[in-house]
Length: 120
Image (cartoon, rainbow, N blue to C red; front, side, top):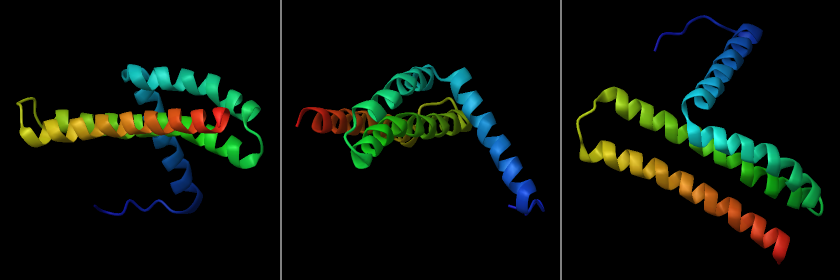
């Protein structure tokens, strides 16, 4: 990949704009991402309220914010696989299944974190 010459503040600004484009694309095209964002809007303030001390608050909030993060990575993986071709290929299916498994693990981590902190 060729270096495009952006340095310093220009590079930071462009990187930020690309990140916002990615977030908008995820929200526009991915139903699961939209659901997770709405969940975050509810659960992040709740985690800040229910957590007893900084560590608990950080764990509750981070476990929730991990969901849209993993969902974006899964969606990006699926988009690349779909871009390569529509025909069924064992490796493409495996990649998509693994991305989905990552989302499921993130959900389990979030649920386990909330249960352990709030009920034990």
